[in-house]
Image (tube, chains in turn green, brown):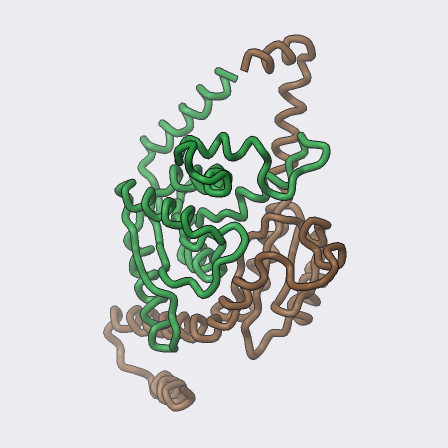
Length: 170
Length: 167
């Protein structure tokens, strides 16, 4: 079974980035998958809209107690994505920030964390013309081609071992 | 952790039930199919899905489709639809299922649903992105041909000229 690189994208709910990453054979880390887990949880009688009072507590892993609860709540969703990331594509000047990516402080924190993680990061700007769109797609395609499409077997086995150990612990 | 072990000890089927719940939860996915094509309309794509007989829920929207169902079925349907015009049909995940009361504007008193604004802004860029993907595909095609060191066919040259003129 071949493994794909997990690519963190910013904005986290971007259609264009999620599509391009998947198109070039990698796995995009999007906030939608995190939201899905939360809102379709079968273990709850009435799943929440998105954030529960527990989430800001989980967000303490990424931001201090003085930081607004909105940032910590968002970080409880986005933080695990940063941890999983093996590469990242950050697009500056997004056309609009609403909803789950509507908090600039969270966005700054997320970008800081991913940059300081030490994974390969591509930084581009949202295109405003056809030529810029061409450069945008070419840069992303070149970046994604440099990422490994298959993990070495040793890593894969190690991952499997870890997961089986976790199951045993549970 | 300890609590969970205690429950498992009381009812041995608990672990199995939990696994079943997890697999059920994983299986259901929802995807947006955003169509920015001159050849394919959302209704054509919807008809294609109905013909394919996959057990998925399809909702037609102004920008494309929302498809929901078992993960493998949705993936198969998405690949099929993407092949209709692969550089101009875009796909992304969606967290909420289609028609969910927490997001559907029918139950929220009208107005665009949260998240639509950003999608609308990105949809405006899709024609340019699609054209860039077309160019990239042509380049790769030409590169592959160059590797074999054959002469450029007149039909290919004709295609390139037409595409340049149509820009």
